[in-house]
Image (cartoon, rainbow, N blue to C red; front, side):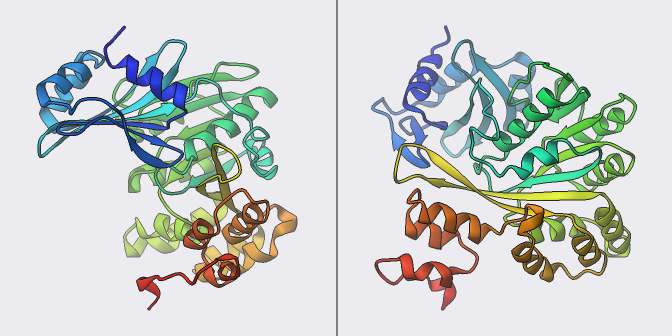
Length: 360
């Protein structure tokens, strides 16, 4: 057993989501969204390098030495998988480990909107799951892919950096490709995907213009494509995709996106106050004809109004999702206020008036 595995065992027992190891600091875990120091000595650079390199594949050590950053996945048998990032900092080496549970929770287990099951059964199109780092996008996507795996008989191809949740074939053929190990890049894997007869393609992250363009092409040519972006709302997601492209191409991309988009799910995580754990709040935009027209006509600012009135299609606004959790007593009013879009709706739940210099 590697020396570092003791930290992972402790993480798993406590229910921590992340482990931070950094030269010049004690180890730190993220528990229920908050950082907590572990009672352990301050880590020295050479000691930490030795500990980290014990579990690192040789090609990844070489990449780290050359670039100062590296990503990969590490698995502790009978415990969990971990998404790993090494980096250099002022005092030496640093590392962050995000735990990926071995069990994939279902849409129902996670308490997610039932409309996500409909998204898993779409014949084609583009579905985006967005949110800040650490908001649970990967968990939500894993639940959707798992639902498809159980209810369809198709070929699912995932392209990830690194592979996070491991899907076992149930009713679908599943091929999972890791960038850097199985393919050079998201772009090259997506190009290859169009010749590999997939029905569903999951792209771990839409990072750049070419990857987005290829994902749109795949969606337009009869594939169901899932992807992630680091955006905080459905309208911001549409803006981000379009703004990646040069001005002279944006009209064409608006049209392409309007045709291929099926849904955007924008996610946030809250620490629960009633029980141990966290809860997700989701904004859901379904690409109805009205939504497609607004995208084509570049009236993105009107999408919020469509979401507010589109409940019968499975849509919901972020504020409505937050309000539901607040009224159920699951989340703190101050946290709800801080993450809400229309903060005025949440002021009556606060015990004292908030001070926010950004609103002055």
